Length: 195
Image 1 (tube, rainbow, N blue to C red):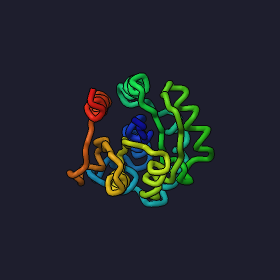
Image 2 (image 1 turned 180 degrees about the vertical axis):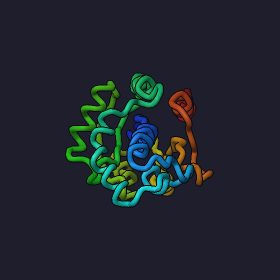
Image 3 (image 1 turned 135 degrees about the vertical axis):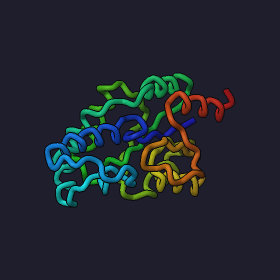
Image 4 (image 1 turned 90 degrees about the vertical axis):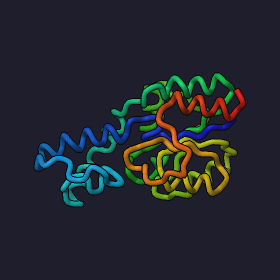
């Protein structure tokens, strides 16, 4: 089986790290804390920052934040196990969206540092919700592990099996095939393969 895996919030703890950094900065900025517990994204509406304050902080810190992410619990272990079981691992990330100076270099360094196995690394634009679908179709990807509702729905509508990683911002669609951890992902893939 050829398995596509998104990085941020599927392999890395992007959302958790982003919230941690936003909370630290909020204390320096106004110390008003979280004003909206359930925005779609942390960046938009969780704090009482102006658009300019948010944009400036995010753009100044995204590279450092991305370099300091940690793998989600058991992700590295189960990705390696999936490879050992005979699957091909395609890392398909939306980091080619203009937020990083050199997304390829930054991502390869991070994957190497954390010993994340992959057969192929593909970059897409996270703001184009159809681009991962195109890449999956072009590369005959059988299953994609994703966190974006819009991308997950697009993948599914185009005949690609998708497991959607539960996050604080994607709970609004209950029709998706959801997963909460890497043990569950591994078990579901084994079931798909009849093992």
